[in-house]
Length: 113
Ligand code: AMP
Image (cartoon, rainbow, N blue to C red; front, side, top):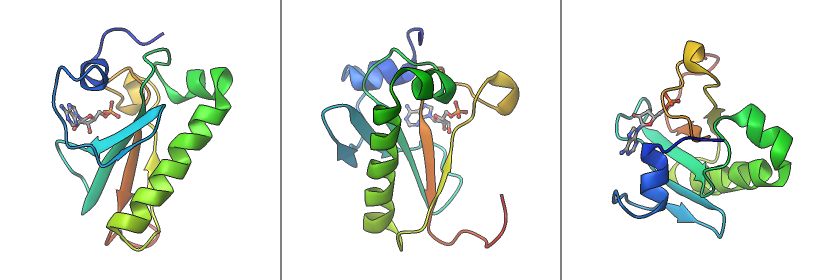
């Protein structure tokens, strides 16, 4: 279970963001500290899942929906190719414990991680 996080506040509308995509269960908005020409966060609206392992176990269809939204955004904002990164756990750099995908696209270096 995700604790009260900044992304929960964004979902609740308490912190305004530029919504780049929205479905019944998912929203996407620009990362505040972009690491690539296109850097968008794709998150489920539910606060139930802290990380991608919890989400994959609990609601794989919702994880698939996040990937679909990411693909649509990569088509809209770049050439359709993209990297999707889930930091899983503090030791891997996760700082917000409301599961989120980093969608990176546009001018990525071939072969780099
Ligand atoms: P992670 O380190 O994987 O947990 O990613 C958290 C991400 O959330 C970081 O890339 C931050 O730049 C981003 N972030 C934090 N607060 C906000 C915010 N208010 N709006 C957009 N992105 C944010």
